[in-house]
Image 1 (cartoon, rainbow, N blue to C red):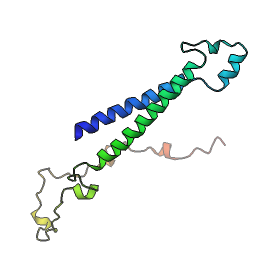
Image 2: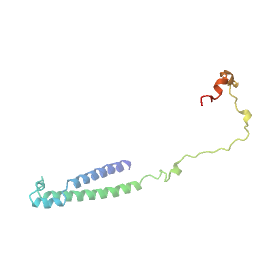
Image 3: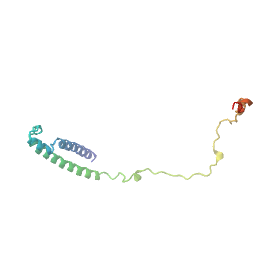
Image 4: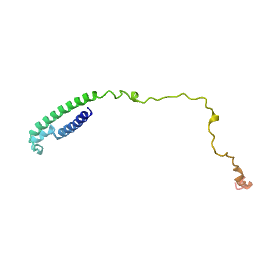
Length: 141
């Protein structure tokens, strides 16, 4: 069933591309008015009127094939196996929750092997301030 779905999906995509190409190749309605005044747009491979009929019929055939492939894809998607869960929550694995154990206390926690850190007296490393630097000079003012 899966291979049929892939084949129809590829055919559906190709038909859609062909419809786009056919629509782009068709002349617009304004091209007929230009052909009446001698514009070069009327000189095509299919003739002045032949291309309109060919492309119109080919577009109609491709549109019918596109519609049929759309219905076929819709039917095939409903015939998928029922093993696929209908929601994400049904397919999620079950999670077991355990209650917290209150018997463990802080004394049972391992102690790190780091040495104890002694505070360093950084004030003894600083140079002493001179009395001259701390006083504000007011004599020059």
